[in-house]
Image (cartoon, rainbow, N blue to C red):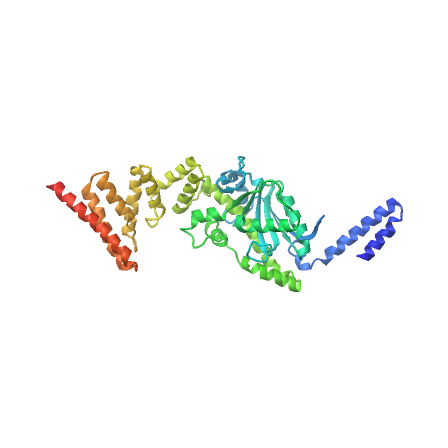
Amino acid sequence: MSGLRERLERLRAQSPEVAAESIQAETTVSAKSEEHLLHADFRHIGVELKSNENGQFLLRRIVYPFPYRHGRYELAELREGASHLSPIAMRQNQNSEPIDANKLLFLDTETTGLGVGTGNVPFMVGFGYYTERAFVVEQTLIRHPGEEKAMLSYLLGHMKDKSHLVTYNGRTFDWPVLVNRFILNGWRRSGPEPGHLDFLHPSRALWRNTLPSCRLSIVEEERLGIQREHDVPGSMAPALYFQYLSDHNPIHLHGVYAHNEKDVLTLASLAVHFGKLLGGISRDAEDEGPEGEELFRTACWLEKHGNTESAERLFDLLGDREELGDGSGWSLALAARYKRAGQHERALPLWRKSAEKAENSALPKLDAHVELAIYYEHRDKQLLTALTYAEKALELAHMRARLSRDSASRNEEKEALLRRVTRLRDKVSRERM
């Protein structure tokens, strides 16, 4: 470095024109030399050395021209569906403007640990964004702590024209980690934080009853049709990074790059999925539409956030469905909703379908039979029909008791049903006199 400084000093003593040409040549040679210092295994996967006013870091940029499909969805579809994502948006100062796909920054970090304290360093920040003709994924990497400020400065530049971050658990993890690093590198908050679309929370609201887990890997496989082969789990990323720091072999990070890239693409595909769900749109013309549980939870989500018109449309679609799955879950929840609203005529067919399903189930639920017994006793005044449903419920209760270990609660259940059956039999007997 001192040799380069001495050469530049000698050049300054020459004429301005000659000096300018010579300095440019020296700078070009220096840049090429630095590029040669970048390991070939980095360059092999498209990683380049990037410099700004705060120093250097590594950058990988991948462009996916439209049309590009990730899983079930063409990513360009978000241009039409982004406006439906407003119910998911979380920000301190709500913005009334519709969400625009071009103003979203899809963000996923790989960090040295799991906490959000100052000791946790995001060594790789992957982010994606829409251009007019493509979806672009960029991945920044630091080779040592001295490159962190340059990396964060580059990220801030991409956040300037974006209205929302799109993450999976980013409000709890990724964003707090980045905020800590911004502060430690001399930046302070000015103005409101960016809006946030954190897809973990709606995923739990919609799929907690139907998926074994709401981890992103499960959601993308079950809802987006994405199958990853030979994927490096995110939990292994810190160990692989430390291994790279130990021997400086970029091969250790190839799998981390691939995993992070797919995570960013999945966020975009998931945004399309939620846009369609919240807009009440099927996946495509040949699609039968979302399953009942997902549709019901989506309608509840819309209703909760004040979009009652769209929610009612989805509730109506559910009410017209012939197939109710196992006869429990969303169908009974929808019937209970109609009952609370005094719309018993809409709840009645749901109870009937659920009761039919329960009678053919290995471990039946009694809710539909009990509701039908209540309806026919107190509203329709058909005591014999009410008694029929109550007796069937008692029969199913005995079946459940034989299969269940919770004998105390099952005994209480049977006793309540027995009282109902006894009362109805008495009413029917007196009515016939």
